Image (cartoon, rainbow, N blue to C red; front, side, top):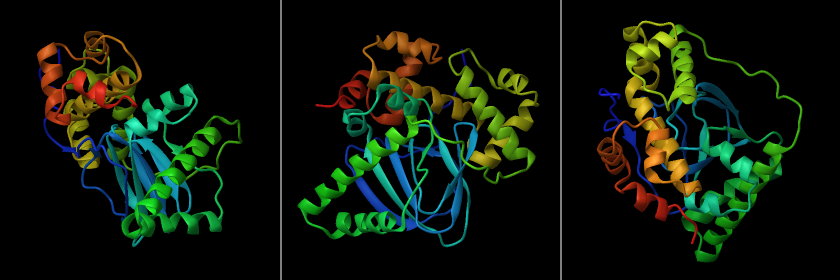
Length: 283
């Protein structure tokens, strides 16, 4: 199965075990990247668009967004000089929060959570997180962690609450972006099946060469690299959330052999699946 599958290349940014806050000017990404934690972002000015899990996700200034960064993601549009606050919440800390199980599972299956309402006073308070984290003492840094946990819990509660559909948002156009969206969405539905580049392209009604060219142009990686990363993301979810046998997880996530699964996991995370499962469980 998947003799051409390659997860050894690309932007795996590690599996952080520490909470982190940073601020920088947002920019488009040359390629998709992924990293094993929950990412909470706050754009302070302007707007940006992510390509995430087969969809374009539009983000406005002042609205917190949350997603599991183990799913390859990429910013494909950003207004110039837009400051962005990024909060990296270790997966183990997210799993320890008192959050509805269905909502937690939705995030780990690729939901992109966006804050519906925001207030200027709230945004101003959140801007202080960066200074408190970078310059504050231990008490202030702990306060940032505590406030982030509360914000994440509120985001998740709002996510499950029934509400009116958000207004339509602008979408980027062009055949390459369209192909990338179709292909990533297809992979999210069929990753557990035996897939090759020709079979994926056939399902998407596009020539394999066209599919790979479009994918590389938009995400900076090949279709098969993305498939490998997505399968690992799903395996990470199962390892963190369940006690299912590792062999079952391997098969359910589309890996054809134990050696291939362990090799890919070790290369990308530096751990075996069992070690990852232990590290991802709240103490």
